[in-house]
Image 1 (spheres, rainbow, N blue to C red):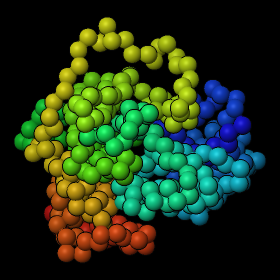
Image 2: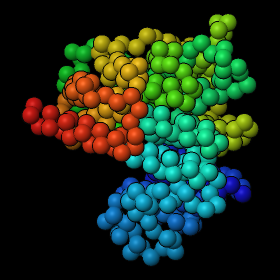
Image 3: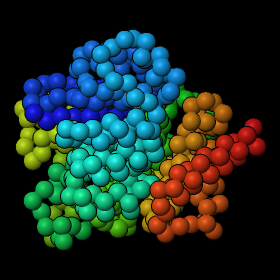
Length: 385
């Protein structure tokens, strides 16, 4: 019996993870965590009967306790850390959104847990802390997102010394093919119409700006120990090739499948084994016929270009890139800034940080710089209204 904790259980990845886990009687969920969606969490508790749950929002945690469910209720960051270190837990799925995932990931690794990671920001901001810790503790970090899972699968059984570069695929989002002037009056509802994937609002906006690929470059750099200049973005609108690797002999090896997050979730749970998949979720290449590939437009999608710069600079710059983006996306969703302002606010924060750049920030410095970047973006947005 494998005992699993899911942080972010009410989000898209968390819900799909539960669907996968429930199909196997050898899995048992012993811990669940949500930010504030207590009604969904209540239903999950009734379905899975975990030992403990965490509601990050303190007031929502109090409201959850009034349901009178037979489960221990935790709250806040302390609650997330307690869940991620639960005695008897084998795997911790970390699918929370944002930098909130850093401390629970560190705690899980220190407690000897295997981490199934669906949170980009954790490695983007603290990869220099987390990957050495993973190696030191001998605990594996398994990627759940489709691109890094594809790279991981493509490298299975290969000599890493013969890896020349990574091809990180991108759908191009809802605005692929448009120019900067076409995006001046983009509305929230336009940016949330992703052509291939169903995701949360923040991640969908990141796809529309292509900031998500900047974050994934940084994440891949840490996961696969490769310099940023050896990671290339390849726009692939069908989202069938989930990513690929190129070896020194010119061979290209990739992983294909339908745009379905259950596949990387299943692989993270079962690798190197594979489970039988529902026939309706299988890729039919005859029916598909043609695949397309393009170079990314980094002039229009400035967020990607900034991500490449942050990846190459390293140190504290990726966390500034991430924190500024998180705040700018929140402002866009609130209707306080325009779509193109997201990249402008990131660029401003990165420029302001240049003089104070740190080569290897500690956890306290990471958290302090996050607050600084968020405040800068908020103040800047207020000045421009």
